[in-house]
Length: 379
Image 1 (cartoon, rainbow, N blue to C red):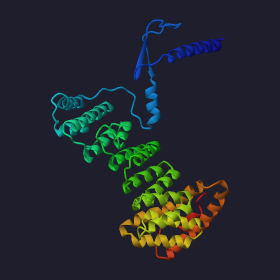
Image 2 (cartoon, rainbow, N blue to C red; image 1 turned 180 degrees about the vertical axis):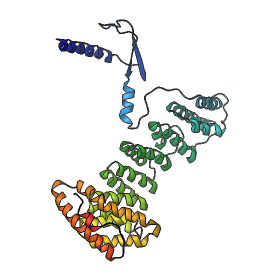
Image 3 (tube, rainbow, N blue to C red; image 1 turned 180 degrees about the horizontal axis):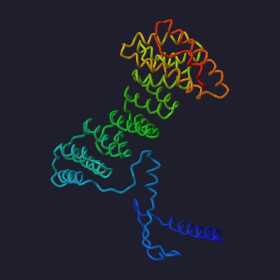
Image 4 (cartoon, rainbow, N blue to C red; image 1 turned 45 degrees about the vertical axis):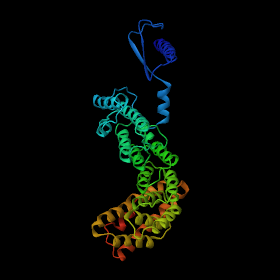
């Protein structure tokens, strides 16, 4: 009977909550206070219900890295600078000192400060057009710092506006502004934000740069987004972007990790057309490709070439990569294969890796990896 009464009470409470949810909000974050009774069957004393409005839910849907919904006020420092700027433009009808705007950008420390910043940018743009007949946007340095300020306070939706070609703020979209947002996406492993930024760059005709590829490839690798990496790689190549060694390393390392040798050799062909020598990343990726193709001697030749090309100071890094190639990579690449292919690949690697090590020793590459230890690897 006690359990039955509990069910009745829970049902009654759920019915009351449904009545509350049907009440419409009228502000960004509306607080509804109910006194005694308050239209309910049971008294609820001084209870505050915070009901999110449709605009807030829409904001969450649109922006994967939306700012906190906790209401805050502008800081005193930002408000004081904003008031001075606005007074100069609206009342005195004179151009304010440049240092005031730069100070506002520097001292903006929350979302409300950034809103003031965008508001004053819009007012300054209008003033420049109507009073000074200046039709150009603000300089690139200022636009870049605005985007950095947005990222600093995590007002990412506002930061995206710095990439709009047509805006009321006098901002010119640039790859530098995009990089600020992409670095935030990398730090938070936010694939959705990366996709949004790449769409904005395309829609607003912002040219891609090698540094953009570095960041995008890194995000794709860290979030296990191979299809996206291939998609954006084609876009970079088609746009004529000269990829850096670091981008090729990430791209090829990912392909080798998945055992996608078809794409691996296509990437290597592209890389070798731009640069003559291997890095540790590209060289070992090719060696892994040869192992998958059951060509351990060729894998050893590539690794030897890497040891001869790079300075002696890099030798510890080469040996560390060789250790990982033996102890970690086989498990990674086997895991990525379909069940029916796993045993065949495991058997091939278990047979070919010792042959590669022996070939390295014959080629004069000293290594601490022992062939006997390889037989203990559990695939």
